[in-house]
Image 1 (tube, one colour):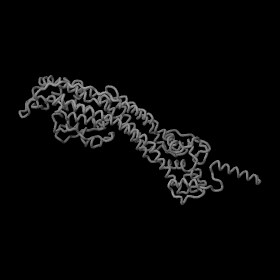
Image 2 (cartoon, rainbow, N blue to C red):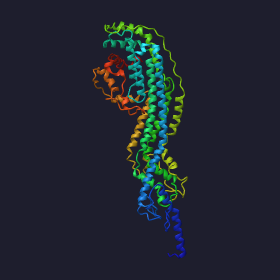
Image 3 (tube, one colour):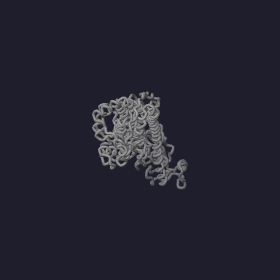
Length: 557
């Protein structure tokens, strides 16, 4: 079929209109002045930038039509687009990291303030109320508070053992104080422990403190650890490098429109989402465990209230200690008489000091410190912020598109679809690695998940399990450590059945690493041991401790 001049003209005009609609260059090369201006503004040299469009056969990422980009420009813009996305990812997580860090500081400061106030109240009231019964055992009280701090801050102590040791040392002081000249051999201390089990010299205070402190401290420390783990996950995932396929897709999304001479075209919304759903497929797989962690953290805040809540217990440890010493003073004579009747009168050391003068003192009655409202405010703010952060990972592609990529307001003929100005037709992919098998923009190997992100998913699971155990009043950290523990000789002449267990719990050679320690608690600090833990200095107390921590461990309940 032959066409006249008019027909040829109409055909050429139609082709030109079609090329214009597609964003393709006309037969006459267009100016690259706008592209040169943008490229130079990014700090690149303009020496090799073409003044007008050139043939694009050299391009490796963008379409190989007429272009304003040389090979070097394409490479520079690809590197820039990658760096800009990495910076955008860091920025997206930085605000949430700052929020979690602020929460951690607030809760940590409050809980430690409660414990410090309790110790100060004890130091202010106990010396005048209990006299030598307190002053001669003051180190035991200091060690107790020191270990409560270490436990809260993540050291691998077992709180029940710490409290049992404390009561054992006070019991020995009770029996020794009136008659320090008495000799107490091992068999006599064994008999003393059996009598104490029946007589309960400290009343109900040891049992009440054990039940309440275990629940309160494990809830407080596990919640604050959860904040730390969530922040760590954000930080580590933000450092995961982008894959080469993602880098190519981001270059097409952001700068290939520049190379094709239409730098003003903004990415189509669905096109942008598909690119980032492919690039962040592994990150989206964090969603389920991330939600579980934040849900568990919100839930455990319920354990901050009530008689066994952190607010009531941590700030009032001294109240139970006062009740215990009141009961101890009341039961002293009865215990001494019963022990002598059952165990015999211990031998007297002629070189020992004489008996102490018996002084009658009144009871110390302390009132629990009422809540200040600080914890209630912290919890209210944290709940709202944690709930807002639940969809962080699956909302990240949309957040990047709307806030960082200057995405088009609508998918129409004017937006950039990766090839030209025009509508974007493919459907939007689902979230997560498995849903990217047919992603049209990013080639994703769904059989090769990112190992760093899988490790963070596991950390989220572990922390969630700790929170769920803590909700039930269980210390899963100690359960994990006890499964791995094995005894070894202490090497200091102390009996293995006494010091062996203490060495496993406190010595630097066998301590479990502080993988969940709070900020400020170093490995070295976590390995510190109280002064009473040294067997040669207090072997008698440790012998008595063996009675408490062995089969008779529940004695003070």
